[in-house]
Length: 135
Image 1 (cartoon, rainbow, N blue to C red):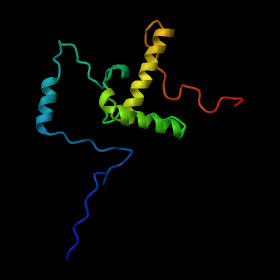
Image 2: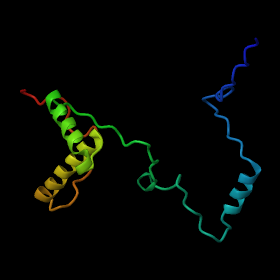
Image 3: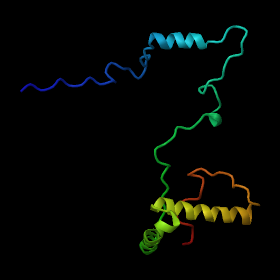
Image 4: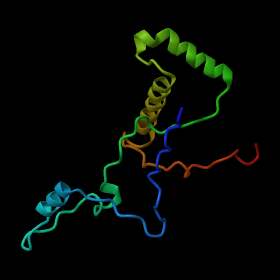
């Protein structure tokens, strides 16, 4: 029995210093020419030219993961609460349950400390990390 021929890599022949240009098909080239503005029209701003804040983010299959530390007994209690209330409360997963509970607390804090307005966003590495000193 003869072995199948090995697949050719899509990276074969590529060079990191001078990357190969992607071939454009003839219909794409005609479409690009048709979209080109005439000399008296203002040029369009494409997504590549727009500021980073205005560019739409790619939709992920899952939201970003957030992790935290918790006593195993508390985690067991959460799972028990989800299992015994999922038909009446609507949280079917641990993520749904925790997100709903945390966002309810955030809403309470916004009302109490920020006149109901959203808090300014904080990046993932902007919170103090590690164990507090003296503990």
